[in-house]
Length: 525
Ligand SMILES: [Zn+2]
Image (cartoon, rainbow, N blue to C red; front, side, top):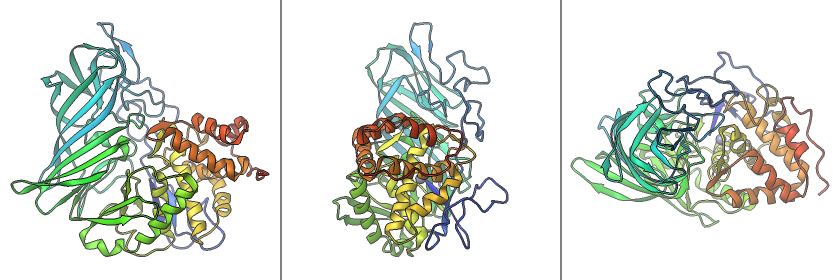
């Protein structure tokens, strides 16, 4: 994800939560300035398990019970316990940053999503059928379902008792099931579409003038779908989305077809590559599905564009193809079957790397191709490798997404003749002050994670040399494709690629609360 401030003059890094954003810290790059600069993306909330949505402490520990009202006698969220039947119970993946999310009891293999939007698009009724494998013996399943009106739950064809406890949906099994068991869980529910077009401290499903769009990072999907809402639990997906005649519904993956109904149509999409929950997209409106052919690197290109903005897409076909070639050379093969641009009625300045179909605002991608468009297109495409193919094991690892997408964005800007990597990295050092350490940033989507993460990537490149750096990045994608990995995993991959002990590098650049004083001298390689 990236958000940009399109101000006058020199680029600025802005924390949008400051009333009077201070001009500050970065990319005052040599050469032409970039008028789009990264700002805090705003959803850096940390769920403390108390329902608060704007806490910024990085030291949250999984000690709070989501059922803070005391209604539950079961295990605190984020912790395992042993139930009366001697079975393990846990309602979270144990993420130290966002301790409510996910589930340690189950692994979702596939989601079959059936959504039916109300004609006025103010709400949606859904049935989500999850194919799960149990990780341990349990008599209860937990899904994230933040504010959903759950109507019904069915397990393996039989009605099941359920209750909503805080942001958790807890479904009782008729009898304990063993680790390794496969279950089919069908949940029917209603959810609202937010009637405002994005708020800086929320993620989820939003209504714009031209329909519905979504940004779900980090935990927005569970506000409109019951899921195991953590990037360590990837799954394949099918989407069947019913909307009024005249509207188009767009989701991730391959467009399969449309089934006509009585005044409605159901749009079918198949995402058969593993995908994290926060990378789900949903667009409803007057969209055209545009066949973009095949890239020079052999990637199928399939776009979704508001019908009255189709001309704008023509401004980005060539640059997207060139970026695909450029990043493929650096990072290895594009990790999915297809890529596309979604040009939507979303918030100007906001872009999101929804898997295989990055989301942009038509206000930003208006057909022109300047530094802002280069930046946005490069950043979200790079995320397909950094974040989507390999997702963060914990939300504390978010710099592995944003730092490397920012670094790739700098490389592309240099390639396009807009500044230099050295210039961007040098300016970004100023972001490595407050909010450290990078491995536990005080803000999930603050300047440290983007600019500081990019600077750390640059320092790593200087430390190990170009050959080892890019070999390491390619090994990173190959090793952890379709899964999640941690900062420690990156260190191991880079040590393997370089033959160096990188403990000092990670101590200084990633785990330290003291800002680095300058970049290391380039490796002799
Ligand atoms: Zn990003």
